Image (cartoon, rainbow, N blue to C red; front, side):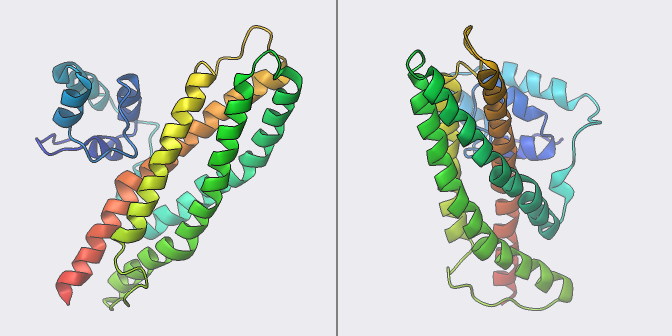
Length: 243
């Protein structure tokens, strides 16, 4: 990877998703705030930039046999993957987690009152994610696919009713940030998804599911915020320059 002064956090993670673990270690938001450079984030968070860069280079220097190079995918393929993998994951896991969390509140809420806040936060997230994903599927993603089809056919694109692709993307990015912050709170309330000593089997099943949900959401947000959205804006700019 050719690291330059303007290389952003999102660029690192888009190039190799394994670097996300390094940014997580330093408590750096690589999804919703991935547009920042290393210098910017290190200055703001008082992090030693050399140490961070050494950790990143250590990861980048090793062969990546397990990762998928999403950055090389076409945008229409990436959209299909996001819908069929991450959107479907949210749809399938949400009702199960709500059922388990409600049960935990009923059985253990008196001894662990934090469960009520965790459950409400997750329900708030579920309530926000459903329309968020639907808006992507019905409004933003079809327009990106229209641009991709026009590129392949050397055709033109119509003017979307949202004006520019930057408008829905700005909304999606803001909503991504809400979810990132919400799950930071959930992670804190669950002691990083560590069941208490008196945890029952439902407890021990629910917390790992919550942690898996957060990890899937982080990858989901990363694919959109650091790869799909920047490339969609660049593609729209290409068509604007052609006119």
